[in-house]
Length: 482
Image (tube, rainbow, N blue to C red; front, top):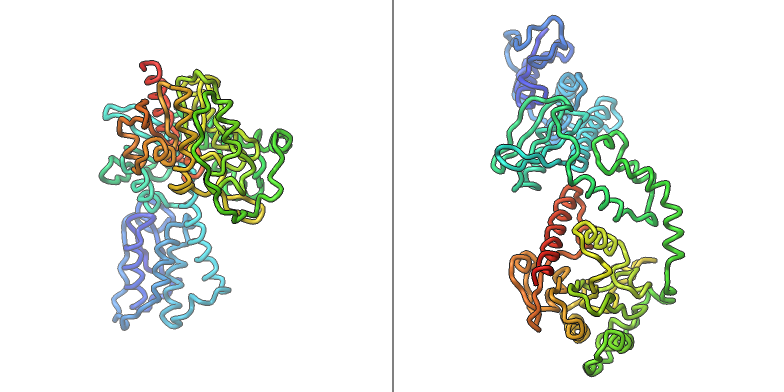
């Protein structure tokens, strides 16, 4: 009997070296006991002691398919204590049958592939469901998360977080092993108890309100949602307390959304008419927002009027001190004839409330007044307006600002920046500069709320949302100081 003690439960190199040596000596799988230093799976093995293979001539060198090494490197992270022995059995089979791994119905192949699949899924879930919480330490702000993986995946999953949150100091604590990032290197340590992780922080209530604001009941598919977000992960998700109530309310909210449509849908929303643009002369100064709105309703300055339901003009008091300029109306805005009433508008409203800006005291409008889209089946997918469309619509935005004379203009996204400054720049650059509109009004640039809806990663959403709120706080401060 050969007893092999590996340095750790994920010691792939140790297993590979020992397995290769044993296989070349012709040792049968039944004659090998695999243990891990510090674990007492074998009552008769001394921890940390490896019994060398019996003196015997080694057989010739052999090669195995690359696919087996990839499979073994992943499957060895599984929590099943038999994984080392099963992998060695597979290795011995491959010595006499190079294609043994391709027998997809062989029970051993099925079991090892199941190990690898389960490990990959566990890594994916860790990437998706880790939630960091801010903690003040002597070294400054640090973000700490708690996670309970099924398998021994912490080391394999950690590089993803180092790339994604490279500028943050963070730790991910688990019962089996913990990992820490200081901005330069990843460091592993022993696992800890759940009590070592911090409780809720100030951002979690904000995160829940944001999650509720982007939850679209009309697109809810409960079975798919439960499959992607198994309930065993809910205990560590701050938004989990909202999921069941939101599902229960989905049917009622969907019905309310249908009933609240104030404008009939375009009878031909899926067909973009190829009517050439009928560019009109620039309108004379209207004098009031109401007059300007009436004139813009018949705008033919670019082709976007043809497939759109209607012109979506700005909205708000004419003595507003702050004007927010977005990109263009979306699907729901096009049907309702009002700006910022769709999912992005809900995120925008919630953000204004969070920083203490009264939506009723600001004016909201878009750089482009018609919805630009491409039909996809029954859906109309947003398309970004091009420069000629932005320029054609600039006459309306310029007159809105001339009538309103606000203290501060906020550009939500690059389309608005292009319209208000006439310049092409990156949003990162625009955010750092002191900008002015062409008329000399102070201008601040930030993201469009729809950007938050498109981010696939939840942690990144939370971070970008927090940064969006910081920009809006600056808006409130600049408006007061102006």
